[in-house]
Length: 215
Ligand SMILES: O=C(NCCCCc1cc2cnccc2s1)c1cc(-c2ccc(F)cc2)cc(O)c1O
Ligand SMILES: [Mg+2]
Image (tube, rainbow, N blue to C red; front, top):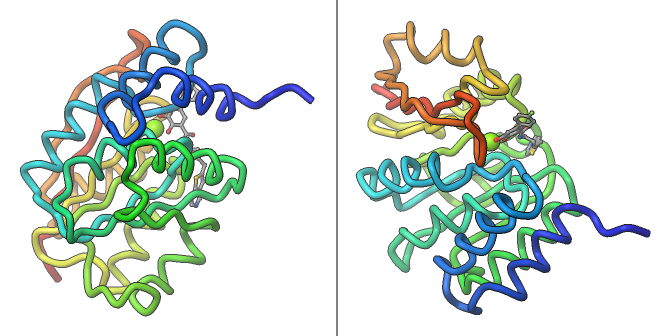
């Protein structure tokens, strides 16, 4: 049977990226998506904004919802100090398997836990599973209509603390209007929009950075 797009992306990484070098993995994926086959990674333009927000947050606990092939996982984890942990959730087992290999090629497997399942099922179990209180940084990049229910679930599970930063991809394209309305007009959040473009295209998109103000 034909290979899948994630498998073709992984092959491009294994051929073109230097094992143990996260930046070469990022460059190999961006090159593949620009010149061979579009894929729904956050990409280089929005990725640079993601890098800046991660660096200014200096998180020690990170949650990513929507791993796909691990591109943003590698982008975030390469910026984290050694003792930090990133938990990333992917519901598609085939994507998760590819992501683990991409993350391993980057040499970051010891700092990342790739969980398979749906966010709504896994979020309530995370505090016990990982012995954490709150996430310092959350990257939302899964089903766009799950951003709102899942940020509310994170609040209800006490997994957001004062100063926690939630960064959401695709708030313009495909869009997450109910989520934007919630974080922009709710006093529990201080929110700002970063205008950009849909990965590897000229279509408008953007990221929303929302800082939790505490209960
Ligand atoms: O759908 C997108 N990402 C989500 C798919 C992951 C599904 C999951 C659900 C789930 C539930 N629980 C835990 C983990 C997970 S992972 C997506 C789509 C586009 C896009 C596609 C076509 C187009 F024309 C224009 C934009 C661009 C993007 O940057 C995206 O991120
Ligand atoms: Mg996205």
